[in-house]
Image (cartoon, rainbow, N blue to C red; front, side, top):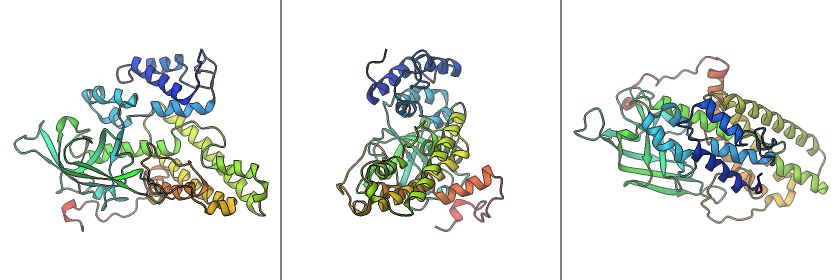
Length: 385
């Protein structure tokens, strides 16, 4: 019988389960059966039927603990999976994602961070020396390791000369510096890599196949942002807006009611679509459909937060605190209306810009022709810098 239904207690329960039932060692069906028997399938269901008899809202806590390590599971070798997966699944280690650069944001394949084999190590084993700069790296100040995309061959077209590594964020030559945002916080960082040594055993995937591995990471990230967690009705950005509407009728003005109904309906449709996608992805790899969920998430957050500021009237013009903070997690919905409005501006950039996601949806979901890319077959070293 569960006596403590707090998020911390649920989180501890998941971690204890993962410590006793290693996902890297347990056959998938056996793992799913064990999760059901532990009451961690649908926590709001009764005990003995896949649940713990607790609030549905705690499902997000469970899902967050289980939703880890898809890239390593897909492309890591057996030794890497055994070395890294448990610490990721149990949240013993936080990892970050070292992708974007000052000159390679939406066009990620244009990145310039170089990884060069150590002299005398030949083509197998040994290590790599990495130098370059990454930017907009969430939680790098807390991360123990980072997923790093580098250029290992400048003489081939940009998508073909990339390789993927796991880098120790405490290694000599790794310098993490905060980037303060419009909200006053510094969720993001810039990371400078100066002659950082990475052993070849920490390379994920084959040399030159980094773009394929990075796409697996990006697809997982977009699903994580837009569709990875089961959430109840009126959760997310629409929740504080609806609370304000119900509790403060004096703020209602003509025209706002119809706009709120439209936003509420769109938020509910997006929630149900995301839940269906989450269930479809539970037993497989994330696909391009996650891009659509993330695209809708960004647009709705911005529209709803703008509506909330307008609804709040003079209160919407106030901002609670500009103090510099280094938050432990990205927070899309916290604090007041002003914070939510400013924070939502970044939703259409992080995890892939909305413009890039529209291209992905057009090409990979709808099957439309690709846009012309004149630099696709040009060696990276010959591209304008």
